[in-house]
Structure formats: C-alpha cells, structure tokens
Image 1 (cartoon, helix red, strand yellow):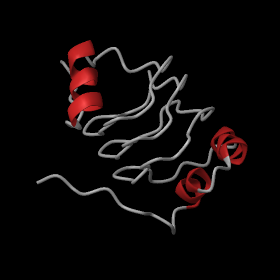
Image 2: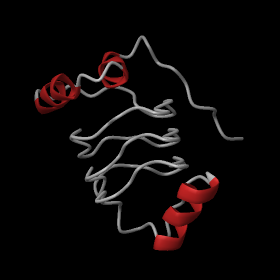
Image 3: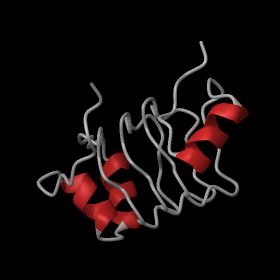
Length: 115
C-alpha cells in the first residue's frame, strides 16, 4: 500500500521549503544536514533553485509544484508524483524513461525506475 504524502511541519528542512527559504535549505544541506523528505507534500510549492543532490524524495507529491531547472539526477524520486508540475529544464534520473515522466506529469502516476 502506498503511503500518502504528509505535511511534515516538524521536519526543519521540509519547513524551509514550504516557507520558500531555498537559500537556507541549500545552506543546511551544504553543512551536511539531512532531513526526512520522503512522502512529503510539496503541492504548489516553488522549489526552483534547490540543491537536490542525493535528496530522498521517494513517495513525495509535487502536484503543480515549480520544479523548473532543478537537477534531480542524483535524487531518489521513486514513487513520487509530478502531476501538472512545471518541469521545463529539469533533469530527472536517467533510470526514468520519457514515457514514465510524461505519465506522471499528465496523469499523476507514481514514478517508477526502469531497471
């Protein structure tokens, strides 16, 4: 059974993203702080400019989020949904086929790695 996305307001890194503090989020990540960003609700949030290197976003929900120009190539997006998100210029892990990304973008399906 798939876990629904959560509002993890007690998670400091999640709260920074929800409040639009992208530079502070990136500073925290550069300082080695890693939080639990799995199964998070990122609906409608502008995430442009985040450093997504090695971030585990598995199971997260990005419906109508602004993901433009984010490099997700080393991030874990397994089980995430990008329904109606803005993805122009975004880089996704090579394990996702273009069809897999399109299905999630248009229909909200969960992203699955093509192994």
